[in-house]
Image (cartoon, rainbow, N blue to C red; front, side, top):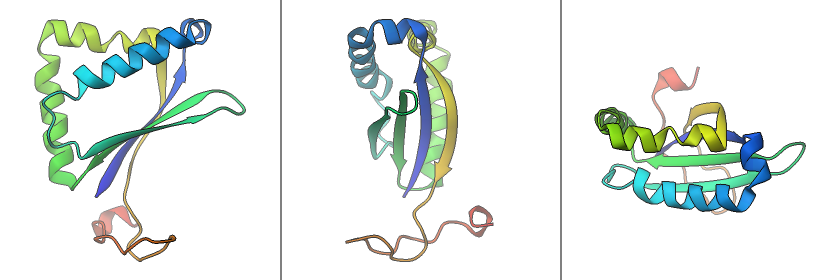
Length: 124
């Protein structure tokens, strides 16, 4: 398994309208991930200090699923209506961080099993 992670910071517009922002994000999740069966799951967490940050984790079984996701988003982006809806995110937040995370190659963490070892290129 691997996670594509994003960190968002709400815009000043969103900070003035938090209820609208969260409603928009709930709706976005429904249409954005529609038809993306390669996504194993998504989770969110909120950091409140020193400033509000929203962390988003998109889970995939492997790198092939991540590549399929990226191809599917590129295809969806060719649909003008879908792309216009997607870029509404600029009203609500700025993406301030992005990474790909793998589980550790050994069984550490309470109640966790060792995960499949990530490619050697990702351990350097």
